[in-house]
Image (cartoon, rainbow over all chains, first blue to last red; front, side):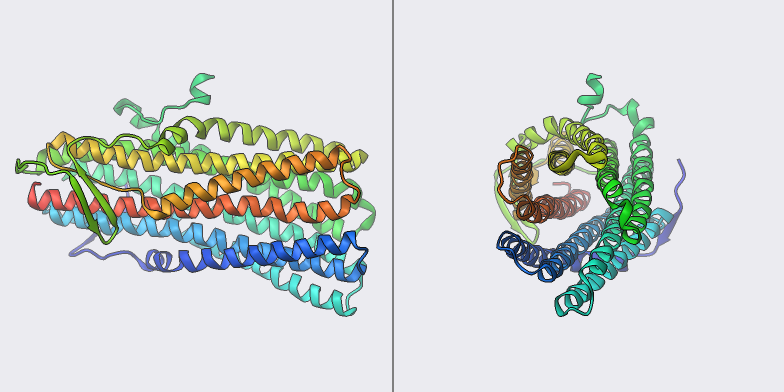
Length: 197
Length: 304
């Protein structure tokens, strides 16, 4: 099997995306926790409004808020997962170099594969897709509550945004599959490199 | 059939040629799922602009979207299985290489615990035994993935009945069973991650034991404990939302709309809990690998 490799004179340490992953997974997780808490509270209030016969515009506005909060949660939670995967890839890179140094061998590391670049690119696209939908949801919630957007228009927009949000989630899952696939590639490379030393 | 329901969690060396297959199959499933999501995006854009098609379009669009997510998650599960197989090949490689390179200094092994920057390390002379979560994870990951995907597919067919006028009953069944399936699929993924943590722990122990040096193993970190707790909470919430949807389908509620309005976010929260646990599992894997790399370097430098 052949791998595209780079040779280094010393341990290059984790690359930029790996360092970012190590720093950002926890804040992203915390943001997701806050967003889902807010979404669940608004959902309970909305459910109460429906059973209490609340105003249609208010109920519709709250539907936008629930979607906005929960999908802020999903966007940041998937980001946390992606960053945790990047952190693992950083551990392999840095640890692999350290082992080769200790064994007195040249430091050969795997060049960032195309699938890793696609992982980062798709993650960014997914994040933007969901966040654009979230921003529009917040705007529609304000517009519907104030009466500047009709309930019918608000419902139509919600249906389109639902499709956009879900598509964003599908892109995120694709990115995560690619990111995990990179771990497999790194494992195969390390197994091959170790047997060369 | 048995090999599909209970695939090996530990390959033998001659299986090496087949270890890229899960990655390829998993990514193909993910692409298929993404393709389904494109179809549902177009369906929702069409329904958003034309109220006359909403009743017949949105139910199957919901069913197909959840099937798309289920297919993507199944793909992720298969890719993770590939990671598990490749981890063992790496263990075999490390065994051979360290056996060649390490000049072992035979000293009396003193059992105990060491505190490090990465957590508490257990020192002993044998391969660490499996923790209960490892035993459960090894047994349950494949049945959970299979049951989850089946539930999602069944839900998709019910969504077709919902689209052709199935009403509240079909709506409640579709949502309830599909999100129970999603919960099972994410739990299956969580169990494979648990199996990967087992492989790192056991493989690391075997390498050290084989060399005749002290076996240093990371004690279960806080992130791993949070992973288990969140996964259990999320799985329970998935079951609860399913039961409540069944109650709605049976006509138990006086105000269906209010219940549907709450159950939608609840089922999303149930998945979020499991996803939150998955994040911690990945972090725990990163920490366990860091400890292993440090140990390999220590062995190469000191021989003990």
